[in-house]
Image (cartoon, rainbow, N blue to C red):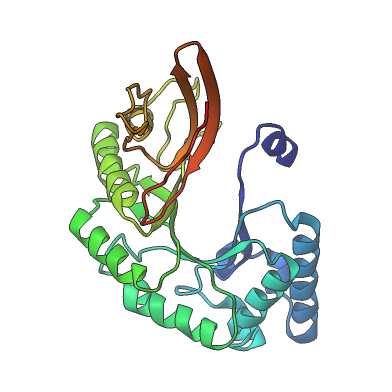
Length: 289
């Protein structure tokens, strides 16, 4: 899979090093205690990070720690801090995330309110953990856009990049409504200045769709796929043409991303490329003919 990723220049993130939910912890690990478990944990994180150092831009270090605490129960409350410190030491260029669900999806889950998320993150930072990113899974049934916006606003005060890491809409809803709800969530995420990226949770397997899929088993678009295609087309700068003013300046508004520029004057022309990145300043580019 990584060979395919490299060959196609796809950016990948690591999900995850540990999962605190015992249901998804290997049975042989659940049967370990004391030094045996500690040894297995150390082997896991060191071998994984050494093998894949530099391969992933992100790591979800200890997944869903607001809801579950398998490793902390058995190895003490400081083990999560050790996970983050070891991961940072092994791959210092990777962005380390605290990833959990029901932070922006609902207000009914007392384990993962925005306040509990912030409190846990700050606790780890005070302990010395390098915490670089906020991971919000985003498994929605009926989204509440104003609530999503308010929660993102509050999390943005931490000054960390926010990623919507596992966006899907429940399969209990019909496909057309599912697509409409997906668009609401994607627009809220894309329009928020603190959200750096969005990933969809669209697992497809031979037995059908897990929760939300963009295509059927024959790779024909489902309504959710149509929404994604349409928004991808909307959220990119199309070809822009124009003439400079008398001072040789030309301005345009564009989405973040990579740009190709072609400038022509009389019988002369030149090409240039530039990246438009997030920032408060207007980006100035000088091109000489």
